Image 1 (cartoon, helix red, strand yellow):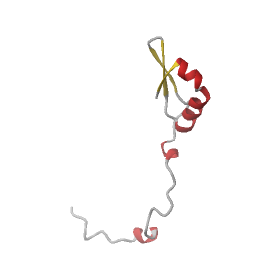
Image 2 (cartoon, one colour):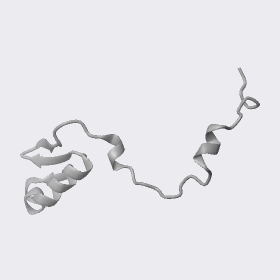
Image 3 (cartoon, one colour):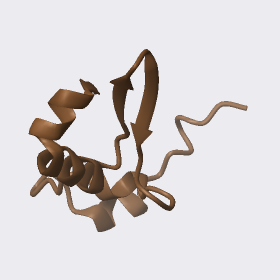
Image 4 (cartoon, one colour):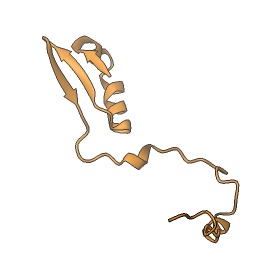
Length: 74
C-alpha cells in the first residue's frame, strides 16, 4: 500500500498498527522518492493463518492408516 506524506500523517497510528499486525510494508511517496515502513525482524508466515474449525471431515487418525499401495506407480 502506498501513501503520500500527508496521507500518512492523517493515518499514522492506523498505518503503524497495520504494519505491526500484518507484517506487510507500507510505501510513502515523498518528493518523488519512495520510503518504506517495514517491521523489524523476520515475519512469521504462518501467523496470519486463520484457524478453521471442523475443516477436516474425517478422523485424522484414520488418514494415517490408509493403504495407498494400490495407487502408487513407480
